[in-house]
Length: 286
Image 1 (cartoon, rainbow, N blue to C red):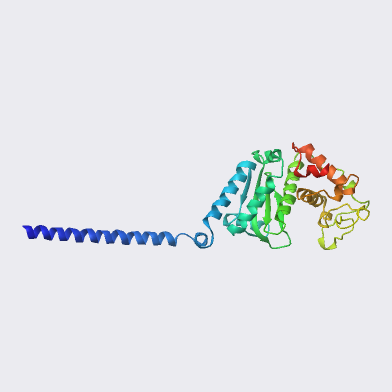
Image 2: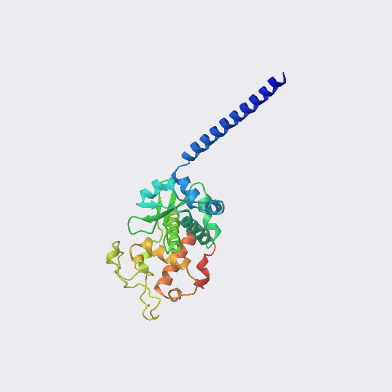
């Protein structure tokens, strides 16, 4: 009887051990299957991206959405948008991290009233980060028939300036919904006989402000960059981008200059159709 009990105990131990091995084997197979289904992007994330960077990106994207009503995105899910503007999507979490932070800081330069536009369900702004365009662009702004605005920004050395330039295009899209006479007199602020030229290769520095020239040499400066001579919209966006990047008072903002007259007219129209207080650069206009 005693020998029989001992035999049963040995059998029980063996049975338990066998069951344990089976459980371990099944667990290993399940884990392996999960790993096989992770996908290429997740494998890259595990090996090459610090999880804190990814979490920080989500944090700032959420803050921008909560505080300004603006969506920022990048990665595979935005590939169709990038393809539509002949660009390559941004996949690098670290580069995106730097760009998102620049956007967040740049947005703080604007009066909060500006962002009431995008908190209105009738309008929304979506910023898509791309790595590069397959042409000469570094940034683009667009609007569809549903008043959905998009800004496409590539990673470049003038990222913040490009953002302000495209953001002004978006503001003008909004203002165009309010009136058919936006900037009706704009061309009167240009040299007599001047015509905008959309062929960039034909642009010259004539009538373009030179920060290293004397005040007398700049007396016939009507434009801040050559690119401003492409169209009235680009002219205004270039002025706005320069103003948003100011860190000191500059000669072209002195009362009586041709460019200051354009600035005054530009801001009169903005204040007419967007209920805002002073912009970041208002200090330099005094």
